[in-house]
Amino acid sequence: WKLKGEVGGIADKVKSGGHAAAAGATVPAEIFNEFKGCLKGVVDRELERNPVERVVRVDGELGCVSQEEVAECLRYPWGQGFEAPLFRGRVCVREVRVVLQKVEEGGVAKWSTVILKVEDLGSGVVYKAVKFRWPLENKVPVVGAELDVLYRVDLNYFKGVSSVQWIVEDLGVGEQED
Image 1 (tube, rainbow, N blue to C red):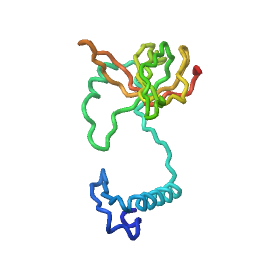
Image 2: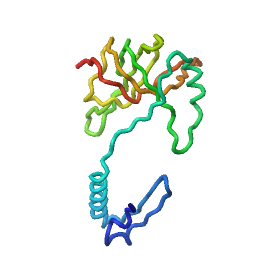
Image 3: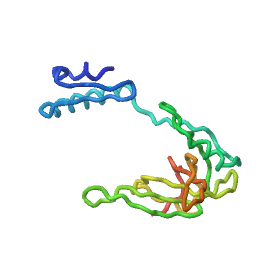
Image 4: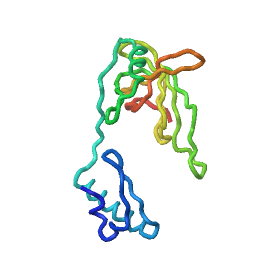
């Protein structure tokens, strides 16, 4: 569906542009609320017809391969339309640190960054894992919890030394602290 055809009588007042991977519109201030209402109506109707489902494409488990070599290979760009590989594993949490809390407007903390040390139960190797934007309404995993994790492999460079770290996309349910 094309949005321009859906905004009715205000279509001629909206300047549109973009390309297949990005769309844009310039909306005059005096019709912005009307445009916003039209847009919301279109989105609501389309979501009712075609509900959104979360789909996660996973490349599998890495197991006992050298994750440092994998991380080095994966540092190269994947190109438009190709996501970096995502892996899954079962881990035991060995250490947890909350290192940053993002404070939003109004002084309310919304999310934090959580750094974990996790033992990959498939290989027995312990890795540093970082979860950015951890919602504060979610409880932080406790030490000893066994979790399913979805992660991307990365290399962390600090003071001239590189080490494997996991960039956590999703942590499965496990025992958590209040």
